[in-house]
Amino acid sequence: MKYTLKVGYLKAILFASCLILGAMLAYNSLVVYPSFNRMLTQNTEEEAVRVASHLAGEVLDGGNELRIDADAAAMIREARDHFRLWKLKIFNADGETVHSTDPGDIGTVNTSSIFRNELPAGQVLSKVVRKDGMSSEGQPVPLDITETYIPLLSAGQFLGAFEIYYDITERKARQDQNLLRATLVSAVIALLFFGVLVFFLERMGRNIFERKIAEQKLIVYQKQLVESEKMASLGGLVAGVAHEINTPVGVAVTVASSLDARTRECRELLLSHQIKRSDLQKYFETAGNSAAVILTSLRQAADLIKSFKQVAIDQSRQEKRQFRVRQCIDDVLLSLKPKFRHNAYQVKVNCPEDLELNSDPGALTQIFTNLVSNSLTHGFAEAEQGLLSFDVRSGEGVLEIRYADNGAGMDAETLRNIFEPFFTTKRGQGGSGLGMHIAYNLVSQTLNGTIACESSPGQGAIFTIRIPLG
Image (cartoon, helix red, strand yellow):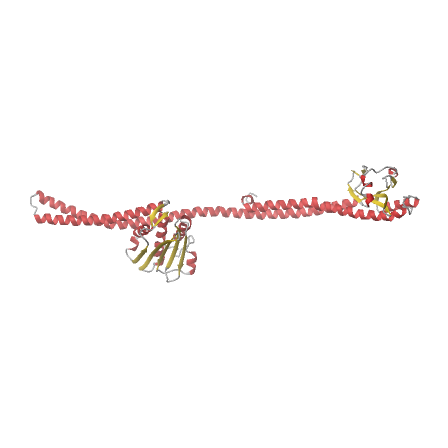
């Protein structure tokens, strides 16, 4: 039961079943068995009352005296044999034994308080005495009996009592045998049920345990894939930015090389005393233009490096800080600029310049990157032009970001599964199916917000992100 005990509610079911099984067995011993004894006592008590009623007329002389003659004694012996009585005794009102089927009892006095209280009030008293037990009078009993006292009353006057000992040995044996058989049958059924229950609980526990292990492995694997996807995204940015930086740096190198060559020419002219005023003017013009081109190119490269550096830092660190949302969008768009170079894509950003958010900029950067990349890969897969827009506003403690494209859109099935892990319509074409899943997790878990998507075929896609400002 090692798997059952590892699952909380299965363990509770097992313990509850043990309690029920124990309660059933306890019910037999504490309720059923005593109730059968009461039934046996009641039945023999009723028979004893009938016997006493039958003999009462013979032992009373018609007045208020007990009379045990030969006929009465014979009838008592007949009743004893017919009803299988172990013993029958008759007491007077003082508790003295005036007649008994055991002659040795005659003359003994029953000093029990029942002759002062219960019997004079007409109350019948019965109890079961087990074999080798003691009767109410303190006498050993060699059989299982029911001991019953029946008062003798005449015109409301207490004259004495019958004490009838019913031999219930055979009845008791049959009763105990039937109870034992019923208890064994119920115990066997209960144990079989318990065994089947344990089998199924253990099977369920094993399935649940193995599923949990598989889920934990899947979570670890998924986290590894998510990190791999993030690194792949960052690697794509590195390649794109490196290609983008290559242009201004190449221009700067070319212009610097040309300026260096021109500088050496002027130096040789100067050293040979052949330089002219016009040569100096051309050189200074060339130097000024070259310096302006080099400075502009290096500034462009510096801006790209600064933007990429911030994006890379934000994506690699998960730290909260105060930042401007518009700057975050601009940095992402600048980093993704190489992907826009050869297509007529337009980007519109409607966001206040001073709108700030105290949150994780890396998460927001990754979300924007995945949204734009998703539009370029899927929305504009077969189009060379398109429109992407960011509409950002805040109010009532919530930052709402509405990102939209006018691309190919999605059908109902794609829209329903867009945030599911590993779902992609570009299977085998470079699509991992993790981009939108990562965006969903970043919004819901890292930023404690919500993200929803609206789309239909040919109508583009709209993503609405709501992030609490507090």
